[in-house]
Length: 139
Image 1 (spheres, one colour):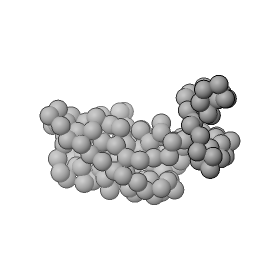
Image 2 (image 1 turned 30 degrees about the vertical axis):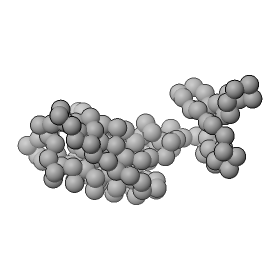
Image 3 (image 1 turned 135 degrees about the vertical axis):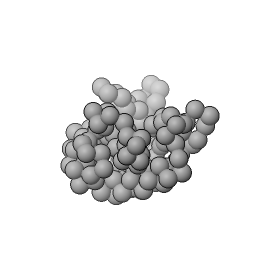
C-alpha cells in the first residue's frame, strides 16, 4: 500500500500507475489480482494484490510504478526511487526479481502450499512462521 499526496493525483497518473503495476506483476510472474486506487481528501491510497511471500517487494513495485507514472514536472527526487531510472521496466525487473527471491525462501513456498490444502491458519513475520492456532500451533 502506498499513500500519495493529492497534489500529484490525476486520472492520467492513476491510469499509468495501474498499467505499470500490471506490467511489472506480469514480468515478475505473479498472479494478476486487484489493483485499487482509493482517492480521499488528502490524496490517494494505492494498493494491489501480491503473493504473501513477496509483500516487501510489492511495496517496492508500488513505489516504482508510481514514480514512473508521474509526469516529468511532478517527479520526486531520483534518490527516492527503488530503481534508477524509474521509467525503465527492463532496468527494474532484475532488481525487483532479486528482492522477491531473497524475500521468499523456497521452504516457505512449500509450507504455504501445504497449509492451503489443509486449510489451517498461518502467520508469518520477519523471524518466524506459525502454523495452526492455539495449543496445537507450531512456530
